[in-house]
Length: 146
Image (tube, rainbow, N blue to C red; front, side, top):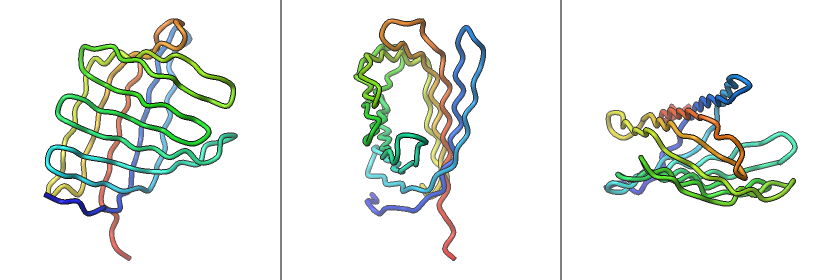
């Protein structure tokens, strides 16, 4: 069992589909990866336009994944296949009820737990609006020492 933080390079691809079409967002971040037993954690900070720094923690367990964001934007989104979960999405422009329905999720560990890939396919409904389909892919790789 390892509790050491491994510095990692993170690539995130998000596709959002609704009645207006598709939106693709790609970003890269630097963060850390920790695992202990069957629990895996990825942490990173992102500088968001107009919002400042947002701190993100992703916790991966056998039957669920949770994404917690803190800063000007706050939420604690939980993913469980075949279930709908709710949270409050807090933004400088207000609070929104967010319902997440998870269709598929997969976590693949690389050799030696120094890399991996996370995939989540889900729908999000904000304040009872039409649901939007999301595909979230995160890949991480241990950073090479200089």
